Image (cartoon, rainbow, N blue to C red; front, side, top):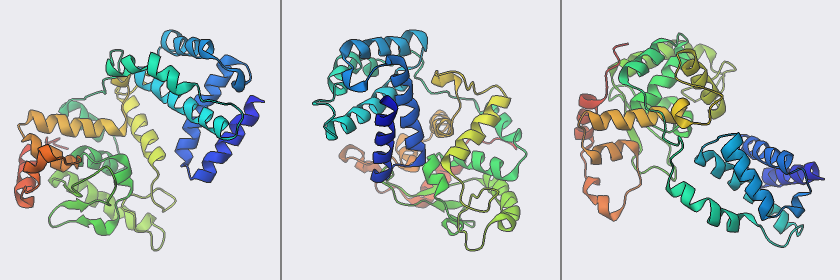
Length: 304
């Protein structure tokens, strides 16, 4: 019975247009929950949810962020059951409000994302021999862009003379222009020497896989974690973010080391593409050339 509900939920998600990665995440989290409660999900009560929360916290020892991901997936599952009139009310929002609100306000059990040093980033990049993989990692580190933004880059988005990249518009980013320095450019060009031989005809993506098509986010995540694990930066069995290395750690590295180098906060926000508000109108008029020069003066040199 539980499996039937889960299959129906996943089918409903596909109709809504969920990505394959989202479907995999929902399926795993809900399967874990259903396997723990071992009862008809329509009969789950608050005590069952309390037991599951304690299981995640005390036995699995996962982070607050991971607990919230479980609860978000389970809540979506119960929203579906409510929509299908299998239950009268989704029990999760009330439970989350009472038992998770303070947890998310006080993230104190390993939710701090890992920050590596400049030397460690150099070691990571130098450990990668594959030209494509090396280019992906150094581009993430030197631009601070999000993984989805990197995947969306096309060849014609790169200005090799200015050493800049024009990103695709998205709801999370204000400024769409980012820069890269000489050593990043050198590695990108080295990758470019083999890229055209690999790409399928008319494939416009900058970063392609060995099938000749645009790289997928999941493949890049796995690739980066694999290299990071080899040099001791990533523990795949840990839920503690300080022991895991993901593509977003490159954005964290970019932001923190620019700040430590003394780059003005408003310049960093502009490069990150952070959403602008009335209180930050002061950096709306930042000159592009001034921003580029500041970037080149402050971005950490890896000497690779």
